[in-house]
Amino acid sequence: MDSIYRLIENNLSEDGRLPLNFNILRIAQGEDYPPPEDDEDREFADGVRQGEFDAVAVRLPKEIRQHPLVNFRIAVVLKKAVESYAAKTGNTGMSVKEVKKAERSIASAKTLIDNYEAITIADRVLSHMIHIKTDRLEIAKFGRYLAKESDSVMCVKLGIAMVGRFGDINDSELLETLGRCEEFTHFSVLALQGILKFTGDFVDAAMELIRVTRGWGKVACILALPDEITNAEHRKYLLSHGAEVSVGAGHVAVEVAIKSGMGSYLLDAVDNGTKLSDEESKGACDIISGLFQAEPVKALDSFNELPDVGTVLSSFAVCVKNGLLEDERTGEIIGKLEERNFIKKS
Image 1 (tube, one colour):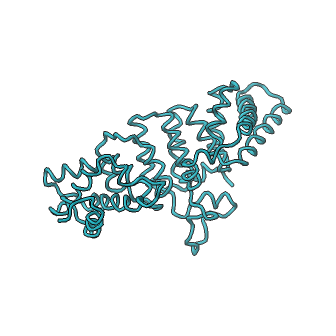
Image 2: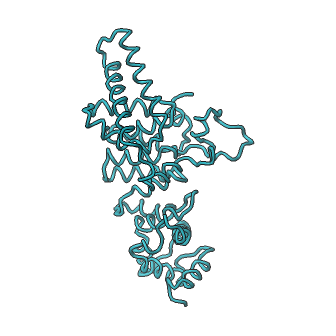
Image 3: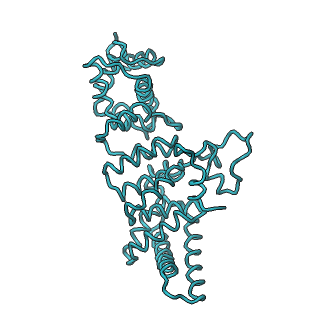
């Protein structure tokens, strides 16, 4: 198999999306790509959607920790591989025997990484590598190698984590490309956050990934966004399309409502008598429907976690009443809001 990075790069469409049938988990299991034309169900691999394991595991921090000795052992092996890769690629006049020894060290590290889910080791292993005095620039260099040249999902993920912690702004394109595959979006968006911080550049990069992902990758990007977004076009996109998530709007409804500024958006519409577009109306209904979806699930945020919930819901109701927000679901949503006493019955 070619490197995962090149597989992704070569299959991106003009709009920066990967095809719906591109499933790196299935490809990594040895399946041919593209799949047979009559194979319609490509979303799952062994019952798991791309990015699902990381999305679940990151919410259960006590469940995913490896034993400290395991993390330390991995860090020691990786330190040796990092130094071997730096020597091998540094024009240091290594002998053939030394080159082969370095290659064995690198291969051993990659094999070891493949034994663990990257989400369970990345943070602590990278911290151990600093404590055992591994050069930061060399870690970033090895991370780029893993991210760009590996045909292993776990090696790519750990490489992304290395770049995010020790790389720089020049790594943005690499991370954005890998992030378009939903199995890597969680790692990529956090890595972009690491090198770009919470700047406008990070928000732009995260929003681009939101536009080209559909499931757990989109969820990861929305969660990573700061609450305060100054770009009006980004807020409008989040309102209109943020809750269009294939794994369920309940996973992002509160975050989208906050980060799109939905409350103030609807209140302005009421104050100015401005009619929402079809996309904005649909998006507002998606968000409130998502809040209802999340309500019975303990792990998800719902109405109680929305700071301006009163403003959002009352403004939504007024917009519907005044014909400023039109969607086929508004009657059902208003009925459910009245039933739950979230708004007064008209």
